[in-house]
Image (cartoon, rainbow, N blue to C red; front, side, top):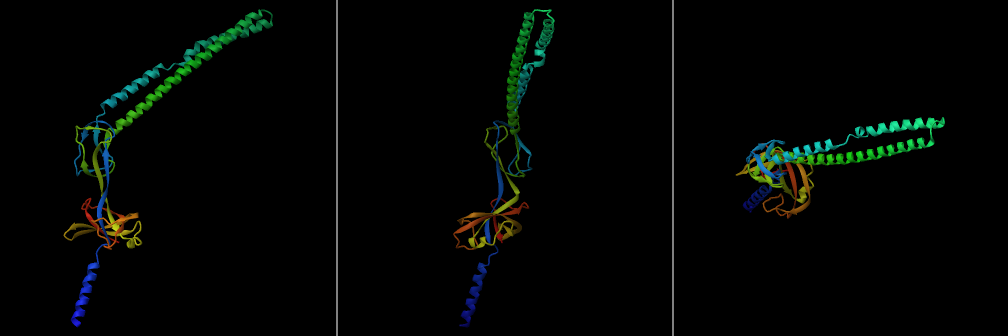
Length: 295
């Protein structure tokens, strides 16, 4: 009887030991991945990257042929100069009419005085006034016509400016830059190939800042909060692990069925909640690597 009790106690200790796990949740490591696509159509004149390259944010990776766009921009500049040369110099063109009006006004003033002194016929004054009115209407029509022409040419020049800005924007999009600092995961094109708008060129990932997407049960949910500091372990297999400090940055608001490859604290749990734990990578963590979390 005593031997049986000792055996039962030993079995209980073994069972408890099996339930004492060194982790609370498991998952795989992820990184922010961006696929960079061509924003212009043309031949890839430069594209000197290889998979695995470390690239800094803002570095020019490639160049799409810019010759035709450059020539079009030059043409737009020449067109604007033509329109500018056609714009009338209003003040110069109406200067002669203004001089005629000044002289006509002087004549009206002179004949007005002569009529007052009974030294001139009233009809002469009326004719002078009529001539003045004709010149004033002529100046008004001339000014209106010149202004209309100026506005039309200015509008055409404005259209050219917009078209040139569009071309400049297209020229800038011929330069392929890295949107983030990271590692080139995949390369989809080669130098000399013809690129079209929307064609993927390469994929880059921020491997310095990794995330462990892990899964917790509803019972664990109440003990996890955003900003919480946790321990993260990268699993290299055969019991080889490395510990990192992590921060909970995201907690799913919806439950989901437990992924087949994921182990949870409660292996009977059918529904789990995904969380993301941010980890600073020292270069050893790889995308897709298995990891564990200790809350």
